[in-house]
Image (cartoon, rainbow, N blue to C red; front, top):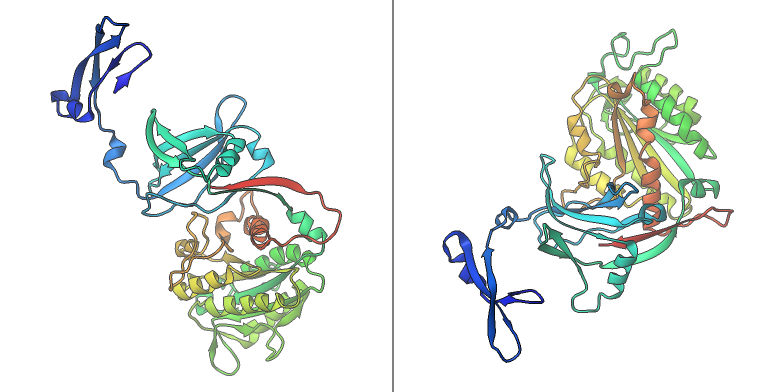
Length: 429
């Protein structure tokens, strides 16, 4: 039935779509007292199938934007893409108070690998509206319609809403949380003979650092100040040790029992010494090094919950145990551990970017388990050298966020110190 406050016309949809041109002209009528039906004109209705109705929505995601003063909108966060699902449930989103002072625009898109995502529908609501909807979720229909050109495309349900106080990176550090630095160095043959000046492992007598030394010094000199004892585990991988076997995780200092060295200078000295005693071999395998670092992080949970570990892997080639590395990273994603990977030399590192989940797709293990969070940051040194961003800036860019994600997901709070707390709310949609 099609009507307004004065007139009405009655038909069924099939009458329209079966007409030639999908158009139907109807007489408008209104009851006026006892005089019966009065003709008030005609109304032509045209049916049109939208393009979106022909295409299956396969990979939906949400983008949330904040309305700014000029009336435009600025994106502030988005959900992950849910593959092949018309009734997706997205993981929680966390918004700070500053981000939702103004109304929010929530848009639902169908993901396209080309970047031309298809808008399914959108709505504009305040955070108060979302909280109200969550409180009404016991009502049979408690949702907001997602509209596109005034056509209903779906419904948005708020599954959970909670407000909590969040702590900053500084809050944790100032209350005694520490970062423990660990290093793993690539000793595969593709680096070149360390005695030749064109080798990536060549140590210049004049004191110029090679790429490995530069990465160790730049990252180590930053991280060491967050570690009270400054004793750092240091490994090598892909080298043939004194006993003649190729090891994919050996102690850089040559000790059979102790893996730790004293300070960044201790790492540098152990590295230089290892080049004289370890023959370069291969292949490039990360799995054992990551597992060893993860075990140290796991053991720390039983005696000190105020430590977070940072493993720096420096390599000149693409990892050859990709699936084993993925499995190790997925397991490690539950631990207080982040992994920084520096690519040195001229190799094609595109495959390495798979390990860095910056595209929003978390790593998946061979058993189908998905990483609980992103713990990897990969940086090819040649792409940042000489630019406005230093290697250490690019490497450490995501570390505070990874650290906070771990702490917040386990509801770990800083100690009882003078903390400037920041209120924040988040809604699970």
